[in-house]
Length: 271
Figure 1: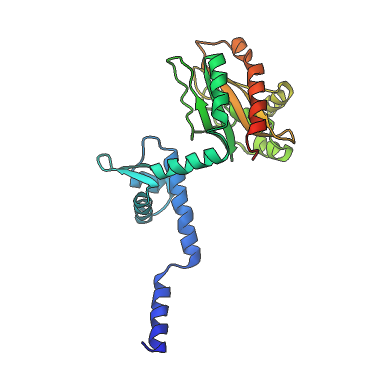
Figure 2: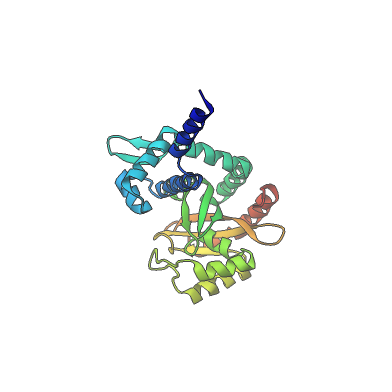
């Protein structure tokens, strides 16, 4: 093959590849689809995902095909719905293990649950949400639904309030001003002034409560896991159904949670 022929072949190959910026953008779009699927526990059709992502159907379908081939997404032929795949679970487990949330934290959470008889939840902040990284259910039949991987509201949960109240000063102020104070129940704090006052109260008393603000019939108390600067890198909560424990009885667990949080703060890598 002559030099001119080689050059021509190289030119054709280069033209057949999308520009580097386009490839990077497609990676971002694919990751966006995974995030959307994470919010759909029952899965979603390609058309539904396309509408939510605001992408052309052809682009969405092509990306979902690639993600399915590589195990990041599962396809359910009967319902024509897509779900997050086991590859995502594997990666999540590796992240959890890396941060100590699985091996290191689990025995502490189990010990708290043994003493309270109720669910114990460990969360971190993920942008404007809290992310459940570990949970131990109590022995009771009524089960708390905030499983690992769950993204929840910061303003309406005990774990979220603790994360906001004990964030770095600039971050706390930004969150207080920027969070969407959506009404999840009739008890949710939706007034920004009231939310600011709530954060000041949480800082003074050292714990946060949720009383049917995130879900009717549930209440919780949470404490922060503090780094060496006194800022929260995670939060630990006990959650109960309202019919089983009064708020006064729930608050009796605060010293236990503080002890467990101090132990976890000493053991876990501080993000």
